[in-house]
Every structure is written in C-alpha cells, then in structure tokens.
Length: 241
Length: 241
Image (spheres, rainbow over the protein chains, first blue to last red):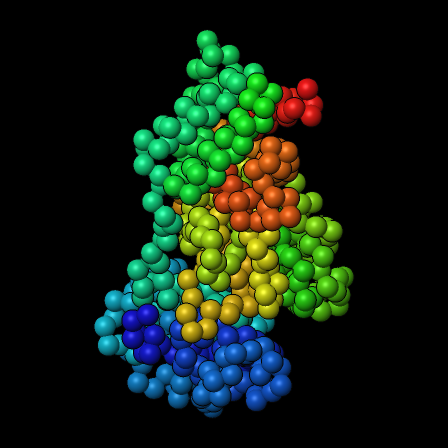
C-alpha cells in the first residue's frame, strides 16, 4: 500500500452508537488506514466501541476526539463529505470510486473524509465545509448504509485506488498439449473397450470431452491421475483378467 | 439495477453472532439484493439480528434456514467462496471486483456467494464446493473484515458491476452443482470399484479431480456423457458380469 493512506483522516461526526465507532476503526484497519477523528461523539470511550473494534484497538486508542469540525479539518487540503441525500443546492459530486481515484492522485495532500450522524447525516453547514460530496451508489429504495459499512466501502475503494489490482494468482502450468493428446487417445480407447463409444462414430462425444478438458487445463499431475484411472479400468476389463 | 440480483443468493455458514446476520441483511438490501440463506446459524431468529437489520427486516424475514450447504446450493450454476486465507491446494482465484464482473456476465445463471464462520471462515470441504475463491483485497497485517462488512463490499461490487457492465451473452449454463455432486460421488465409487482409489484415503485425489472439473464447468450434456462412461465401466466390472 502506498503511503497516501497516511495522509487520509476519517472523521466521524456526532456518532450516536459507540459500536459504530469501533466497527469503523476495524473497517479502516482492514484497508490499511489508521487516522480516526471523532467530533463530539455521544458516548466515547465505551465498551461497545472496544468490542466492535476487535483487533483494531490500536486505531481506536489513537483516535483523536475533537470539539468541532474545524479542529478535525485543520491542515487539510481536500475535504470530502459522504452524503446519501439529494441537496437543494447542488455541490460538486463524486462516486466513492471517483473520490478514491482523485485522492490517490493528490500527491502530498492532506485529505479528510467526513461521515455524518447515523440518522441525519451531515448538516448543511458541514456539507458546505466540503470540496466534494461523495455518494456511495445504493438501492434508491433503501440507501441506508450502516455508518461503519459506509466507512468500509470508502476505505476499500481507497485501498484499491492506491494499489494496482491484485495480481491474479495463476496455478501450475497446464500439461503440454502432446500429453493432453495422449490422454485423449487413452480416454477414447477405454471408452471403446467398455462399450460406451462406437469406434466408427466417436466424433460428437470426443469433441465435447476435448472442449471440457481444454477448459479445465489439467496440469501434469492431473493428467497422471486421469490416466491412472483409465489404466485401472483397463486392468479390470473381463478380457484382460 | 438489472434483474441479475434476483439470481444471487448470499449464503452465510454457521454464523456465531446473530447481529452479523442482521447487518448482512441490511448490507444486502442497501445494494438491492434480497435472497439470504443461513446454513446452521448458531442463534436464529434472535433480537440482535432484528435490531441490526434495521429497515431490512423483510430480507431477514424471507431468509431461508438450511441444514447443510448442499441444500443452500441446490440449483446453482456458479458458487463463489469468500476466503482470506491462502490454501495449500490453489483453487481458481478472483478479486471481489473480478467476481462481480464475472457474475454480471452470466446471463440466466443461479449464483451463490458463500461466507464462512466469523473466526474460522470456510472449511476445506466447503471451499472445494466452490468454482472460485474470492478474496477482498485487504491489509495483509490485518485482513480480518467483519462478516457483514465483507457482505457489504461484495454486494456493492455486484451492484456497480450490474449497473455498468453490458450484458454479455455466455454459452450454455454449467450443470447445477447438485448434479455435479452426484457425478463426483459416482466417479469416486467407480474409482474405488476398479481399485484405483483407496476408500479410506480419497482426499488428495478427489480434491484434485474436483478442482479440475470445477474449472471445466461441464454442462448437463457433458455430465450425461461422463456418467455414461462411468456406468459403462461398472457394467463391465468382473463382479457385475
């Protein structure tokens, strides 16, 4: 993870349920963020916050409690306000993903992402303290994300924006095609021996099986197992016993 | 939101904390998903589940409780298992975002996303029931997402994929997983009958074959051919002739 996460503060305003503060700390830490600021939390510190923070107790312990939003935003270059609601005065808008890309590009900038109250979100005054309003795309009939869930999605987008897509882990190399051909020949032979395949008309069925095993991309050891099964079948054939 | 969300079931296995079930229901509904399945939940129904579901009480009320994973997966064409852990036997892997794009493209397919226990995740057996393992990119020093937070991210990615991706028509649907399970049982039986597999120690070989055929994604007709071959082998066994 690049160091831009060090420049991001997550600011929770007037949180009612301390459990949500702990869950937000956990959400942050899973995505590599550490700087939590709490503006006038209703109950804090609190056992529920500690319990829900789980292994992110260090993030919680280092959380800074502020009396007002101005204190929490001191020194910031960009402020983003998470908001689900439509406002009468339109403000520059971004999706969570756009916000994350934007933040990743602001080299050296101090960034704050602010999250409002559980039931009423951010006030107009708080929204006007933001450069951008950020909306998490959601079900229009029920856009009511839990506070920590919104923090989780935002931090997840920041993490992905900060790192290239994770490398897709590829397994072993598939078996060379000549080994695959020998397997197909063996398979066809056994299917004929057990009376499943008409040797005069192998076409359709063999074509399907070729397609199937090509998609599976068996490696050498897979081929050894499959051919082992075929050999075991041949040994038990009545005419070989 | 396109209707593909109707074809997605979120399956929670042996959840310990009922609050997480409620929070998962809420996470689903905020992203437009509704089909929740609970395999052997520790405590359910429960007041904590109801409280945390908030306005997603309808999703919770319609949740289906199952005795085992097979029941929850009946009729599914694709099964994705959320997993943070590295496994000794590598399985086809996807990120949450890749999974969402993939799901959005499988026109008409029934999809299951399975989420394991809070502390121990999915068992090896459960992981082997999956076509793909899905990993949410996270802080390697603390990848421990809360269960409902993982559901939230996955449903969020599904929603974005569903609203952005053009629908790509894919080929035939693969066979439902219950048919695949019957094929595996048949294959294991025949391998034992021909003396290839030690019925006391089927593990390693069966695991490899499961992975191979999961990658191949056989359709109904493929399964008919494969089982036809197995039946033909059985008919020719010395003890059956």
